Length: 259
Length: 370
Image (cartoon, rainbow over all chains, first blue to last red):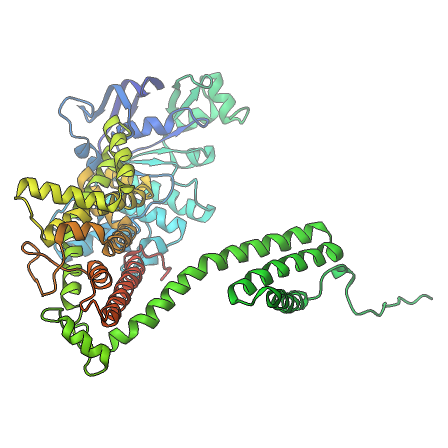
């Protein structure tokens, strides 16, 4: 239940502004890949192109190919909705639906698409997803309460449960821990380690220790200056990036000399 | 050996140079007495007494404060006086209106038949008898109440879908292109349309389409929806705009289509605001008189068919009762009925406002911890 992603010569634009230039990267199935880099270098923008969330913004467009197990996401006739149901996403800020209970939040992907599901199946799916997000024990007695009543860390894990409930091939995480405290961050990181048994995980993070802790491979993005496009500088095993990077810029960044 | 001496004094050094707590009351008392004295010289009246006393009070308090506390505190007192004064000036007409309508309207409402009968068959003869004290005030507002409720309901049924869908188009699909910008502009213009113009538009439209002289409740409902749609569009638009984009993106990322996202995520999140906006829009048009007069005419008998025949409504009932009393020689029973109808109208608007608050509370996203 996981697929690999291969990106070939991808240029990402906001209108006429080239935000990310010429990225080629191969993301293995059932692995955790971290994107690191200074603010504004385009790592979040690039992440959003991987499930066609980028084009939700007016004027945003993409040139190049993103292959999900060989199928081009940007091929003619590809429905972005199909893409997104295979590639889930967790956002920087926890965003449970405020009108729904915890249970309905987990089932959102099913219910909002009006798929028929029996009560028993729904219960099983809720429990499986919440267990998968390490949240079941904390919320099993209050599944009918609103999701916005949970703490920030619990909300974020609820969002992860919601994302894995639709059983995607790939899960993208856009700085999932930047709004969380260390304890919740630890819970989410443990979760990421478990998720990679089943899913391909791509995570954007500002926290280099986090990248070192959770990821198998790390990609370093950088930007030459304001108004210039972001570029993929180096992509390698995480240990290589942090201990023995081949690029000077990577070494400077991971050793804290800038950024 | 030294001993620390605790200075014995009544007030803390930190509160030196302040007016005592009772200062405003003293100034108020002096101002009232002085005001009464001044007014007595030029002829006493309550309104003048209030105004003169207020000016004396403000001047006295600010002057005293400036002498004792310094200019900063004096300016503070001046600002407080101005704010409270403005508040009272704004409140006076409101209380006065409600008081007048209550005093004049309650006798009409006390008549048990007032809400249950129409004006059908009520002639000047009955009113003359009532004025002479030999008979009761007969007649009621049942027909007008029915008309108001039907016309307003139909107007709501027309306006809410049109207004809500327009707002959805503007917010979710508009993307700041020229057409949505033009629509926004014209919606703003429409909110400023005088209500009589809306009435004339609806009347002319139905004259042209259905036939000359078409006056029914439905025509009035169209006129009212011309007034209502812009209000619904604006309030719904504001409510949809404050739905966080994160929720839309969360739904998209789950593979939910845009129209389903709008239907199942955006609208439920904004529904409390939309519903209270709609209720306030209803409250805004329920008291319209002129457009109903030119589109539905007025009737004295019960007409339950909103699509046929002239129809009364509460505002037009009030208007005709005051302007053309049933008995021209004894207008008092007519004005009693008019005040009663006015009270009912105010109660309706108040109920709608309470309803809007209730709806907002019921539909509001739950944020409770447990």
